[in-house]
Image (cartoon, rainbow, N blue to C red; front, side, top):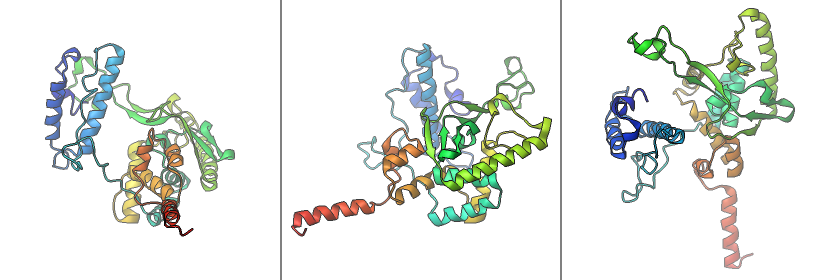
Length: 327
């Protein structure tokens, strides 16, 4: 909003905002130079579109505008449209997943980093939890006896707000000497607003038990220095003094791990893609994979099906035998 939307549309009143204004703004955004020197990727443009659409939907619900002007507008199209005459048919962006052998190598390295890293990446690579969901797990939701974890919240970094009058300091909100309202927060929601229970293996359950014991020792050692804000209470993943693991530090650990083990830097979200791919390759039904990953629609899960399963091959062979009269 700060970097892309407000510089182009911030001077317009919500009640006068038209589809044509938004279309011109996004045409300009598409030409903006990225930090790497090129134009913004389609993925980034689409994310900006989604965020702004959510903002206008909230404004409509609150009664600030009569109707969201983006409701029937088409989001930026991917560069690899199959049919130029039908831009609604768009191929999904390439899903980058680690192979089974790469997952084993990364997990072997994670084991050398300690119990917390081992459990964190077990949940990312084997269960496919989103980063925000994983870092927001609380001990109350860990059911070791049933090998289950309830996913009902997530940790995210809330933007800082200016504390001075009329932004008189001349700095960005995060650098304002009187900033307030920002920092790490745990909220009772998930990306799809769906509470779900995910299964875990015996190894993950044992790792969580070991991590709990280590955390109690750290708490006792830290004493009064232990940080226990209301938003952070009972978190599973914490620093030795009680503060949460920030998404940026989590990202940095993953980058260092994949660079060391694989010779390349993978995205944190690639762990989730890897989990989905491995589950499907192992023969898990799409509906089961959808439930574990927390997808809102089955077509989100079907993106991970790269080749036909053995069961599908068997079905075709059975039909062929039946029609040919060979049994």
